Length: 132
Image (tube, rainbow, N blue to C red):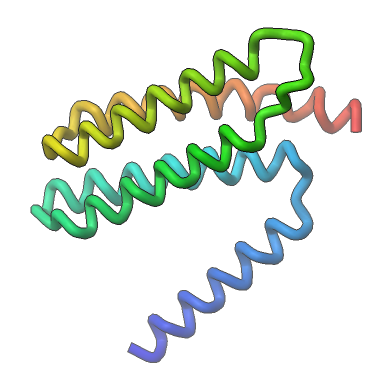
């Protein structure tokens, strides 16, 4: 038990130092990965019949999506922030429905959407680094 607590504390420190040193682009990558991890946790909890754990993981994924929405640059002269806002909102609704109905299909849908979005975000990393 002590080893588990120590490992969890180490992971928290590792994440905190990663966040402090991360660029804005990297922070968004980390948030997107966080959504994917929480959805995977929710799917595992659903499979095991752990309703509380499923709800907790889904709630965390929804919180991260809210953070992504809050980080959108609304000053861009494009409709991209509005489209991403709508996508994040859609994902939150689907997660809420997945939790309410215990529906793995909706969890898979959100994971696929986020994976696709993250692949695109990861793909622009070289451009962001070159511009930075």
